[in-house]
Image (cartoon, rainbow, N blue to C red):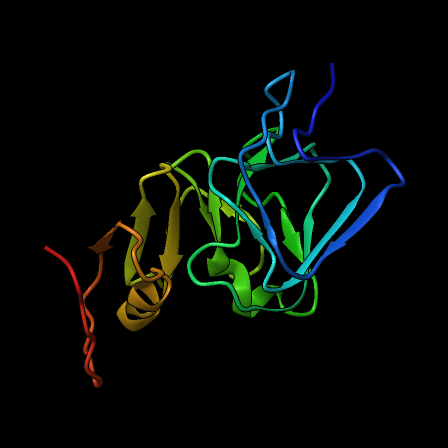
Amino acid sequence: YSNGGAILLADGGEAIISGGTISSNVSDKGIGNGIYNGGTLTLKGAALISSDNEVYLPKGKTVTVAETLTCSGHAATIVPQTYESGLQILDGAAMSTNFTKFGLSDSAWYIVSTGCLSKELKDTVAVMSKKTAYSVEYSSLADAFAAVGEGEDAIITLIADTTLNTTIKVNGD
């Protein structure tokens, strides 16, 4: 039995994922149905780990965002071993502009632009949640709408006053 339904990165292991989709995997131990990251995991380009295949991070491990993530919607759902305010879970050259591409397994927590966990929303205008029960904060309502991929369902909650200077197209029921 092992952790990591698709990929098990042991200490010292490294994986760079730049495209494709990891989906429909199950970990025998239920930890990291998609990826168990005990090593170094880098995501870039069109990398996509579907919401049913989360990335498990032991304490002290991060996901490196090396380049802009081009997939629509979220690139991955992260399950940290522990939830602590200020705990770094994302890093890399493109982290601060791609942190909204990641969700968390616990909807009471957020990933902020520094790549750290937070219980509080700061300078946040909207929160977007998807069916898989994670929430991501956005500093603009337009960014929150843009993070919802075509055909995806999401709830966007406006939590602060904002002014829109552009048109936002919303498709739905």
